[in-house]
Length: 448
Image (tube, rainbow, N blue to C red; front, side, top):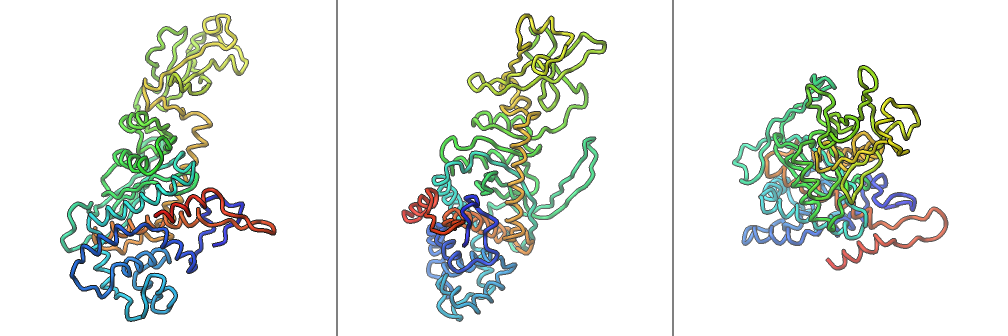
């Protein structure tokens, strides 16, 4: 894999459309699949072993890594490519599994204990990257996306969510439905690093599960995969704008970047509790924007106060008089200034209402800039659905579906590891050695 020196650590544009044998070998070595293969061998016990679980597992990984739409296409390529066969331990064409063997293997892989081992392998790879990359997980973003699936006529494995019908509506500012999307299947919830576009946690639910309900388990998984205190920011859309989510993020000491759900039907601006002693009325809107009231005119005017930062030691938001900073005359100067050049200063505790007054207020440039980084989760969704086919809709049955999602997530984090380990090509003449991240990942791989 050819990665220029100027590219970022996770250079997703440099990922090969058709991976070379060297890249595939590096990818297969990066997957910590020994516990999964041991459990599969133990489950098979004394049954027929015409096609060992290691070979079936290798075929499944190559199907996703080589972007085949069906397992049969990968089997056909293995029949043509002897070097590719040797890569996963197949010595002859006769040793290639049949399509029905792979179908049974995929269904068996969908048992709850094996799905949990797939998730454990994913977590182990995230921990490896988190130890090597110092800023992995500092800025995160989450979202849920629809996945199409088919119901199996056979009795499903217990303990797995079953496919259901889902509907998502899009509304305008007035609350009118402008578009709707319906599907049958599941929802895939992701928490990704918004800078490196690497998934840190995932969860598959039915279509009825809300984003606010699944965000805390995603955070639990991500925090277990990363060093303590690594997650600093979580960006999410308005589906997670609930009091429970904001309270949970505040307890974890994580700063939220969450859009506001418009629920107020009346009183667009309401007084802020605890500001009765101030010379003028201090109010806020539904998004938490703070205004002071200029009652020198009739009718009175609400003027937006200037955000002056988050005081971490006090856990308060500091706001200043807009007239003092922008140098214009206000009718309430005689009440607010009182000999102070800074004018009126208001401090609002974040604990007063974590949903309205987060550490990064919504109506600020910092919020808008950081929130734009949430598009990283859309790009990760695009790779999972379009590049590796997690949403092709051809997988039948809950067991096969959950197994395939686990395999796709392993392929994603596996290629992320390959990109991070790849040495950089120098722009000029000479050789550029491995960086500290590449050396740390290689040491971790040797230790494993």
